[in-house]
Image (cartoon, rainbow, N blue to C red; front, side, top):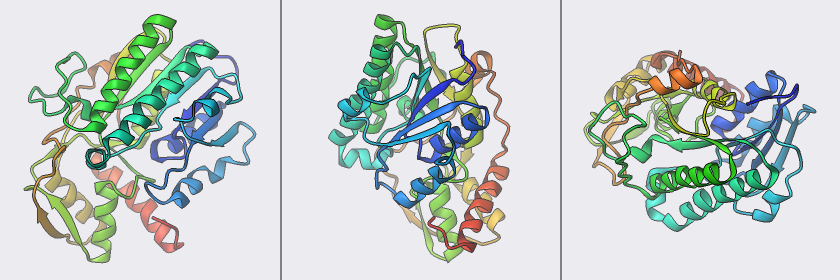
Length: 326
């Protein structure tokens, strides 16, 4: 993307886990950042307010509280944007099974509203947060973007496939460069409290049982948030083609049992395990082929899993010391 001196990006969901880390880095790089976030109470709003607090006094930062489903609000956002990074979404596989219509309304209609903004304002760079969940139960590992036989098994995953396809339509019709980044299990400081590493660490430290679904053999490609941020920045600077789907993972897998063992090691405490049946919508394995990201984006994930757990622990314990929300 051809950038002028102070490029301006719109980040939807920019008060959340990944979005706030991205805003940190882009502001440090001299970008102008506008964040649109509805501060959804899916988890503690205090955490999101805290994520944006350091930026509010920065003249290059502008926060808009609002919903991506509100097309009138989206249409009237102020600023000449060079790019959109669309991270806002209803998150979570299991909750999407309970309320599929809400997930489609936010994740599909909301994405359409942002694409309409890009069309109307002639914003030529659109980075979309997709998900490894789109692959469904796929025995051909590691998962490659060239595997077009997608069989998503949750409404959340279906909504992300829909976003990728909408992006192709707008790219084809209106010349918007659309890059769908399929994130693989992102973790690190500020991670959502409902996600496993955060939830397990909290319960282990309190001496409470942790809920373990299945026998511990499920495997995930855990990706540190800082590596994801640099993948997104690579996508913001990409200009060699008009439409791409790109995996952002670590390129290795960790079993559930190994993940718990790493948390135990870093915290110096043993987990009490409550063994439960496997959950509908969960997949047994996620595993990214990241060769395309390396080639197109210069993506090079650096954080070892155990070091990422240590970084999470440091953030978590600092919050405990100062009695901050977790």
